Image 1 (cartoon, rainbow, N blue to C red):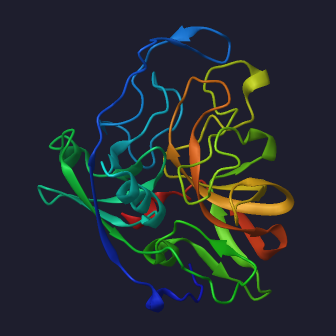
Image 2 (tube, rainbow, N blue to C red):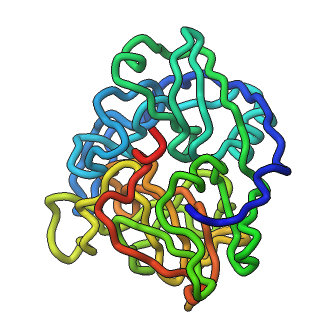
Length: 280
C-alpha cells in the first residue's frame, strides 16, 4: 500500500504461547440455524488442509480455526498475546518452521505451510514477533489502524490517492446486517462473526457471503471499530477473514479488524485477489 506510516517508530516484542488443545462441550450436540443438532470439530489445536485462499464456508466444522490456535497459559500473558499480536506478524514453531498471523479469535491464529503444520502438535511452544499496535497512516488522520503489521500495509494493494482518500482493495463488501457475534467487543480482541455466510442453507439466511475465503480482505459497511465494535452509519471497517464455517445461528466466518474510519476517507476497490496471500 502506497501510504506513509509511523512504522519506523514502532517497537517489536517477542511473545510466546503454545498450541492449545481442541476443547469440547460436555453437553455434546448444539443446534444449527434451523434447530438441527450437530457435533463437529471446532476451535483449538492444529487444523490441517485449510489455508489463506481456501474457502471459508462449506466445511463440516464449528467455528473453523485454520492452522495453529495459539494462547498462553497465564491469563495476563494471554491477553498481551491477543492485544499485541497483529495480522501479518511472523510466527515460529519449536522446530524452526515459520508462518504468519491471520487474525484473532479465542486464540491467535497462524497459517503455516501444510508440511510444517503436520509436524506441530498440541502443547508445542510458538513464538510471535509482535509489531504493529500503534501503527498510524500519517496522511490519513481520520483512519484508525488496528491489529495490522506494517509489513502487511506495505504489501496490500492501493494506497493514498490524489484526492486524499485511501484506496483499499477488498474481495467482498459486507452489509451491516451481517454482523453477528463479536459486536460490542474490543476491536483488538477476537473477531466479528458474520451472519449469512452459510453455504448451502436457505436464501433467507444468505447475504451473498458464501464465497468468502480464508484471508479475504472485506469492507464492513456502517461499522465503527475505533473504540470497540459497533454500528455507525457512514463508517467502514476493513477486515480480514480469519475464521471459517460455523453452524451456530448468528455466527459464521469472521473478520479481524484492520482499518476503520469514515466511509468518505476510503476508496474501495472490489478485487477477487484481495487476500492475505499477498504476504506469503
